[in-house]
Image (cartoon, rainbow, N blue to C red; front, top):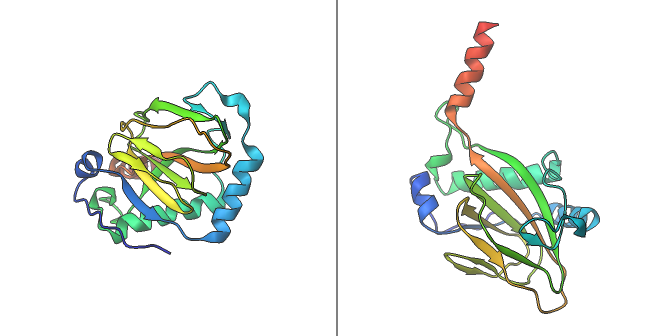
Amino acid sequence: ISKPNDCTYQSIEQLRTTHVHQCFFNDEETLTFLEKKIKEKACSNRNYTNVKASSTDWQEFINDEHFAKVVNFLVKNFSTNNLTAFKSPLSNDYKITVFDAWGIQYKKGDKTIRHDHSQSDFSTCLYFSEGQELCTCHGNYKPHRGLMLTLSGWDEHWVEEIKEDCDRCVLVFNWIRYRGWEAKEQKWKERKK
């Protein structure tokens, strides 16, 4: 499923300050399911956000088993590329905690205003089609089906107004890296019972 990635980071600080992490998700059955769900659930009455396009609820994909495949793939990609900043010190495996995941459907005239996701460590986008570029402080990225881009939470990004007829879908999720103290705290609470 995974194409190798040229990026290798030895610390979370290096990943945050370097550039966008790219990988490719090629599970067509999962892509088709998630894209269909975005198109069914996206609505235009959420225009109060930086995204000036139709979108789903922020939590739409959190408990979705198909979305879980995407998250597991991303974590496996980090492991394959030896991104040790995501390795849990207690369980010696790679973990992330996703706290929101939503879909966006862009059409002609839609755009996203320049913003960041500073409340999270990172934000990942999964694309379902070609279309308008994602603009970032690191350069622009042309979406295509299965492309996953991960930016640090405070990297500003935007999408210029779409001039041509299109149906551009993307699934976005914010996440933090797993923190070992969470597991230690849980074990401590269990011992106190």
